[in-house]
Image 1 (cartoon, rainbow, N blue to C red):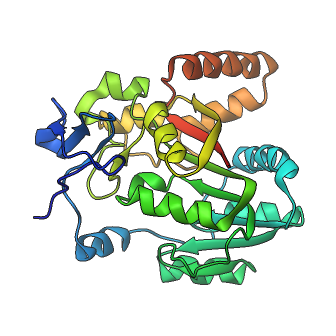
Image 2 (image 1 turned 90 degrees about the horizontal axis):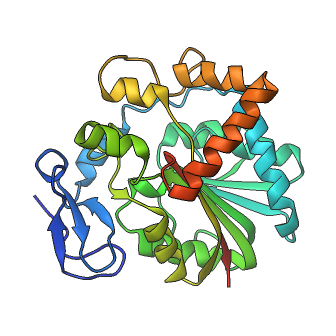
Length: 292
């Protein structure tokens, strides 16, 4: 079994087992910068076997509320539009890029699974296969680069962010989401929190370590939010439910629908997210970074 001997963020060799998480998950923490990650390095065979279970069918559930949130994001991205090109790293089924193209963006994506690549190409998305390489795109080609729930899957974050910096224009925006290791649910569920799992998630970020990663690679943080709660994640972590995290019947989607149709609940959601961000406890990190 291969293991990491130094920190993935700062290269320090001063690592400690994370008490309460090492025996079950082999999580280690850097004593220098505080970054938490899987000590074990997965083999190509392990990763291929794990991700072969993923399905990229066209009929996968996409909530209308998610589409609305995509357009709210795209509203924020308008001020960065110069070359009219947007890249989504690890774009999955291409749902976000389809919405971006409706607004006139030239859309590009990357994915590993051949099934996902074929699906996205059928939607008119310009695709690249596998991880980013220096010759994947031209330097400073994109106005905006996005990455939704991807960076937690990789154990070479420095290399990845250097390439994102290379492909983004000066003053361009990189937007990413990733699970927050300091989420209130992780404190509540501890090692049972099912966000933690090998080889699915290899890197575990907090607001502080996410900022550190991008600052070290030529970005400045515009804002990093920590928002969201999840009834479904709580129930599935406790094995009280087998419902899918993303489905029309999940508790989370039902709650979203209730909030969407109620002004008072909408206000309550904003207040809850304000305090979750203030104290860094939301389940999701949402980072906005500008290339210097």
